[in-house]
Amino acid sequence: MGKKFALNIFYNLAIILSIFGLVWCYNNHKYLPAGFLVGVACCLFYFKYQLTKEIRKSFKEKDPK
Image (cartoon, rainbow, N blue to C red):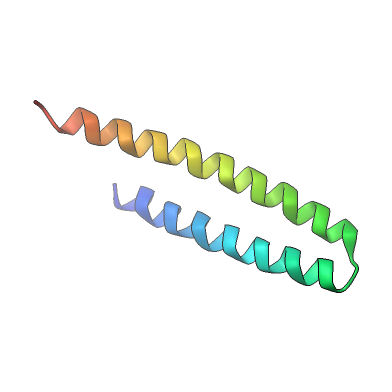
């Protein structure tokens, strides 16, 4: 479970860095790298969403009612 939390933190940091990079690219009129960073951010959001679903599922399985 600790690896999943560490991976979640990594995804958060990578998303934040890609957003900062996107802003930098936009301010410097570099649109091709900005498009790449948009794709990277979308992929990271998707992986983060899948990881969050998996973590919630594992918590529901551990919590008997």
